[in-house]
Amino acid sequence: MYFESFADFLEMGRHGFYVWTAYGVSLALIVTNLVAMVHRRRQVRAEIRRASRREEAVENHPRNEQSS
Amino acid sequence: MWNWLKKWYHKLGSPRYFYEITGAWLPWVWPLAVLTLGAGLVWGLAFAPPDYQQGNSYRIIFIHVPAASAALLGYVAMGVAGLVALVWRMKMAEIMIKAIAPFGATLAAIALITGAIWGKPTWGTWWVWDARLTSMLILLFLYLGVIALQNAITDPRQAGRAAGLLAVVGVINVVIVKYSVQWWNSLHQGSTIRMTEESTMPPEMLTPLLISMAGFYLLFACIVLVNARSEVLWRERRANWVRRELSNVL
Image (cartoon, rainbow over all chains, first blue to last red; front, side):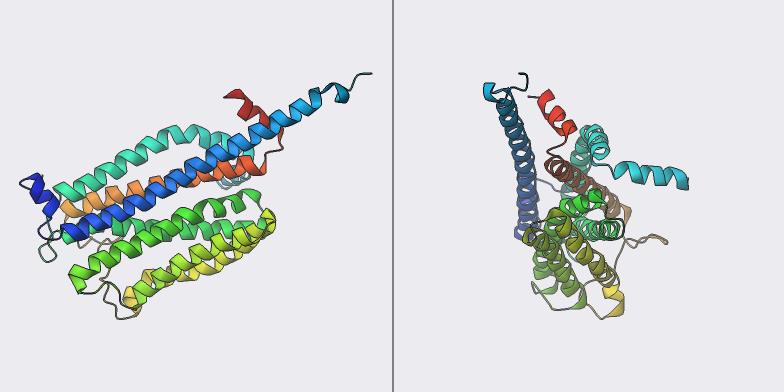
């Protein structure tokens, strides 16, 4: 560990504001991408499952039975 | 070797094969990405020595340089995918362009923002219109252009080809970014990591920087793969294998 104390670490020799802002903004942007990624993954899966259940229901409906 | 490459290329061109093989990779690549990125950043923030001129403000380098380099590398990858999409009309290549662009744009934005924040205490200004900074801003706009083109065209195949063209043409800008500090007088410093000769950076700083770069690349790869997999499922949503894949795990 280079810094003597945790306060020192936050202070970054008077450059704390710059260093922590840079890291904070970057983290926020990366997290936004991760959230969008997970959201899209769930959305696509849910949408396809819904469509496939709907089609199954239509196929199984008595009116649509193939056998005579 | 050539035949093996050709076979691999054709296999990866199949959305189903791509989906299956990346599904096997991701459980390994995700933890590796998180560990590498975490190790690089903690080492850089807390354990690396300060710079003799810039003090602690230089610690921004551990995100600034990896983000910039991943944004450039990502654009080249997108350009290659664009070329494949244009010449061979490969569906998988179109999907890759779409998967790379959002996080590529984010990384370019991170490089610009952290650069501005670093510039203030170091150069005394947030921004100058010099070659390196301006060409990097153009890189961000190119990424945004690729995203916008894709959103503007409804037909996914046409959108893919249009975005592919922009991706290919934009690769010129990557070359300009890379050599901007040599071709023009720039406030931005030259590169301190060298491929062919000794780097002009002490190993106590270089090691965490390289680890952090590896972390950014791996994270980029993970996000691109997950996004590409979602896009594969969506485009193949009528295929039986997709229906079966999704009905297995409920």
